[in-house]
Amino acid sequence: MKRLFCILTAILLAVTLLVSCAEDASKTSSETKPSEGQETTEGDTRIYPDLPDTNFEGAECRILVNLPGAGDWEDWGSRDIIADEENGEPINDAVYKRNLAVMDRYNVKITGIAKDCHTLSAATKQMVLAGTDDYHIVTDYLKSMISNITAGYHVDLATVENIDLSKPWYDQQCVIESAVMGKVFFITGDMILIDDDATAAMLFNKKVLTDYNLPDPYQYVKNNEWTYENFCAMWQGVGKDLDGNGEITVDDQFGLVWQSDATIAFLHALGGRIASLDNDKLPVYTLEGETCYRIFDAVGKYLYNTDLVINCHDYSAKYANIYHMLQDPIFTQNRTLFNWVRLRVVENYRNMETDFGILPMPKYDENQDSYYHTVNSNTCNTIEIPNSAGIDPEFAGFIIEALSAESTYTIKKAYYDITLNTKITRDEESKEMLDIIFATRVYDTGEIYNWGGVADAVRSIMQTKKTNYLSTIERYKKPVAKQIEKFIKTYEKLQ
Image (cartoon, rainbow, N blue to C red):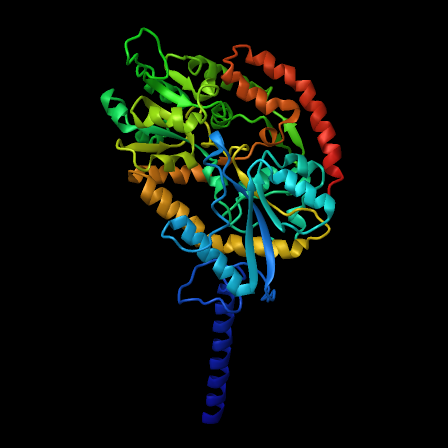
């Protein structure tokens, strides 16, 4: 009996150990399990890529990136791929460490090749037509590379074996809204930063706020009252003729400074879209709907008032760089309450003496389900694989996945936690606002593909201060429908 008891005890102990091991194994999912050679610590919650242990034996992966452009394009060069050494600057050092980690882990060489920001699309096209492998990966401006997509010069990333588009290091909203017919030819995510830089936001000057004894806009956000009407009401009494010449000029004070691209940002913020994807992932023109009419009525009600609002694009002929020479000084010299920006611009105010805050774009009203923030197609970089005979998409996809996963814990952290939340923001509330902004980004299919020039027409509504915007929208309805029909036929043939 005693022997039987010992045997039963041993069996029970063995079963207990097996169950325990099985439970532990189930907790270590494929998402958190590191590849061979990746060190972990106890309690490691990091998410790792589901990539095979691979030694590329020193193979080179070449990534085409954009240099800053002249004039207004000065701020929009790549800073997320190339870093030759550490220099103490958080983003540069994070890029260096990210690249080094991936190169060491997979024995691969990563080389960034920089070209003028307006030539990347042409360089990609030239390479694809030649069938060479000059660049395995391209990070081009969203709007610039659209013609390359429709010409078949890019690979459908949804078909690339080593890329898992469901992973958190890819912007899921971009994946969803760009997937026309389920095909994904470009993505954004943690591997690059310019998609974050290109995101719309609103800044406010705290000195002007105090001088006019205005309500706290942060409280509006907290109370779900950050609406378009409350936003506009705040700056109605702020405009002022500072130099006493009897007219409002660029040297005076305003309630709001912005650019023509903000027209699209307000359209999205107030709940509108130029086009959306239906249940079959086909684009549908939505600009002519009642929602958009209501939005443009609201825009025309307040934002045409040149005594209170200054559109920097009205002065493009006068300034070589309307942002640094006009928009920035108006804000830093305390001559506007609100300043519409894309987030890259916030870094220009690092040394601003007056405190400022960061806000989401306002909602249309309190019943709107969410805030919405445009990722500007003119300045947003995306990640693509060229469809060239000389390129192995699986190799390029492997590197994209590896860099993206590593970026979550390196350059994304440096950008968000160190640069934006520590070096740039002036208060804790701005950090909360950034969380809202990044969680509610919009990629408008209609703006991106700009069928028949409709997105440009929307921008021009504000730049030319048109009051007949309804006729403008209606005029584009039939041409856009024809362009979409043609686009769908072209898209169906893309591989």
